[in-house]
Image 1: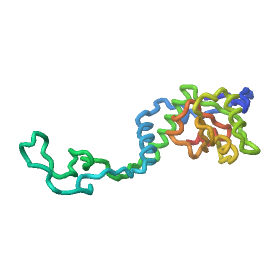
Image 2: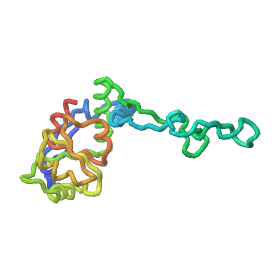
Image 3: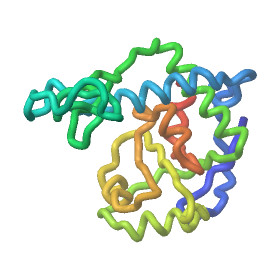
Image 4: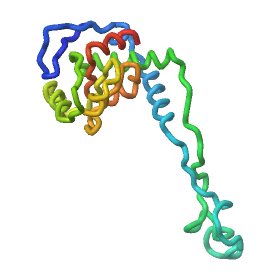
Length: 207
């Protein structure tokens, strides 16, 4: 598969870049492994520190408030009962670890499947390598306007860390900057356009 290479002004340079069909054009992209990889990524980000108090953990009197039968309502014991306002919670959340494991080959298949779907939907744009002399948000916005992506959520994939590019895009909520080695299934899918630099394509072709 070949894609045209644009400059930062959005003009076609006349150059072409070749995308590896084994990465960007799978015959049968696997949606299930994409689900597993995204689920693992989001689960690993969770702190799992949620906690509510059960009736034994509530500070309050343990005196039985009324008789067992004949009151006309549900039976309950002390003021810490879950039936009463301010009482404990039944089966409430407890601290837990949401992290899971996934085989490397499964994660690799998920990335390739996600990139295939992006290519099929024409959501991949290739630009020439670029950098900024100093961090300037307006310079990055100018690039998105040149590529006609200013109103879309985008992920820009670089080969290496470029501090000035990262700082220029940091205040733009709809733009994320990642290196090719950091690109995961979630980042591939969580955008409307995947902007690849020429040098990053060389790395992604080895995914």
